[in-house]
Length: 127
Image (cartoon, rainbow, N blue to C red):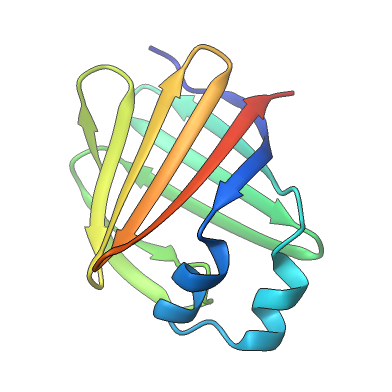
């Protein structure tokens, strides 16, 4: 399955609680909570490049499935992680106590991040 495309956020659940749990400052949480960010994914075999644009903030991360990489977390912090493909439509990684699952179903992408008992869910559609 090829994941390449542009996707825009449609809905999100538990944004504020999750962002507080990962240490995002309150003023940034308030600025970002209503932004309908756009993610662009470029896949070349096992190599992925994600460009996430939310308002004026742009985060770019690149990784190769199964290999450790350095990525920028939404807090701006640099983290090391290994992204795995689960089945044929899920990208899964764990870092700093957060489990991230990105599931692709047709033109819909569901991203779920879990820290402790807080589950942040974001649904995006292909544009």
